[in-house]
Image (tube, rainbow over all chains, first blue to last red; front, side, top):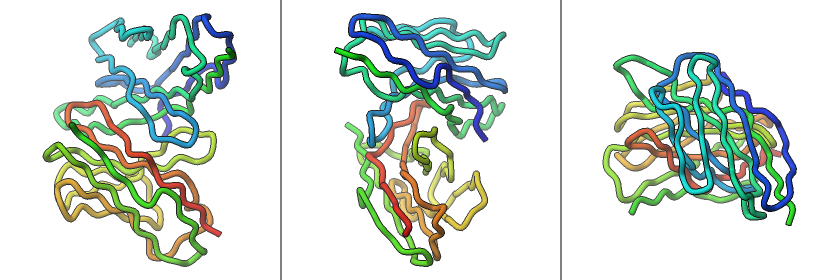
Amino acid sequence: SQQGEEDPQALSIQEGENATMNCSYKTSINNLQWYRQNSGRGLVHLILIRSNEREKHSGRLRVTLDTSKKSSSLLITASRAADTASYFCATVPWQGSSNTGKLIFGQGTTLQVKP
Amino acid sequence: SQTIHQWPATLVQPVGSPLSLECTVEGTSNPNLYWYRQAAGRGLQLLFYSVGIGQISSEVPQNLSASRPQDRQFILSSKKLLLSDSGFYLCAWSVHGEQYFGPGTRLTVT
């Protein structure tokens, strides 16, 4: 079953602008991850944020997590044409002592960065 | 460094034919392994996962099956393909939570 829902479904911006994508989920989580997928390719892991973390940075990426609202956001600053891709959030549900690492993906946000 | 291989890259099969997709991981031991399917323009659906040799958990009942004959080998199979089996199949591995994906196999059932 799908746990994450991303918003917006599609986003088009100019190079240099910031892009913000949001993700909401339904159940308690162990961690939340963001992935990027270029058209027709496999997914690339971007960043992982644990349930006890509120914000994480990696280069031009900033991820926030609000467990009270069951939501996360991914901010890409100073976007580039090469950032054009689909972005997915994925959650690892909290399973107590058993951690299989299963990911439940959202439907994704398609980002287009125009040169 | 770790690498993950999937083959074939593309496959066109008639309805009712068998299927075997293979995934192998190099450079790590005892990884968790996963099979996902992605329909066009949609997110990934987890099909199977494995935490060890011979240990397979199914997430979605369907006419697909999975096997893990070796620590770093994960196979997705079907005895008779359906039209609805068309999609992009992705294998992934993880050790510490983050998942690393293979390049995928695009399957078209005709």
